[in-house]
Length: 218
Image (tube, rainbow, N blue to C red):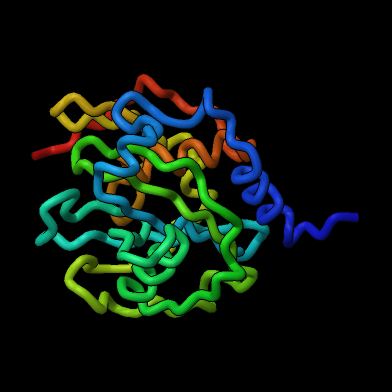
């Protein structure tokens, strides 16, 4: 009988084996073209999940510093630019260490998802999916060690799939996409789209009212 403790990991691992290109990418976040890979700044984010008690799991997020030029104050996956000599996995793990203080071995990485073109910032961003076998509460994210993030924390799956916390976010500048209302703020944009896709593709998503909108204040 399959171990229920490893079932979430297996579902997540299947996402990187063969993502359906028809369901990956959005109008404001299309899959990056080969030319964009060469011409635009390349970045990576770490999408880290871990068990979180009561057969739940949680995802690691940071709050971007309000001093940042792009996406200030937003809840996001830890990540940043890919340095010379790095691949997306190297960059995602390094950025996670710099932003959260968590040193994670490469063995936790399940794989990468196709890079997306984040048009608002002109970046090509590769999501790196990882799973920790240790409970989220056992990880000790530190206070931000650099100037890019102000806070670090975990958001539980049961909160993300709660229909009362699901909204369609409008930013007033033409972006519309799936979002999540959390105690720490609104998850939207790149992070919201990727989490929405993960919940859909794993079968964890619960029906929610996509006509319920949340307008971001300037």
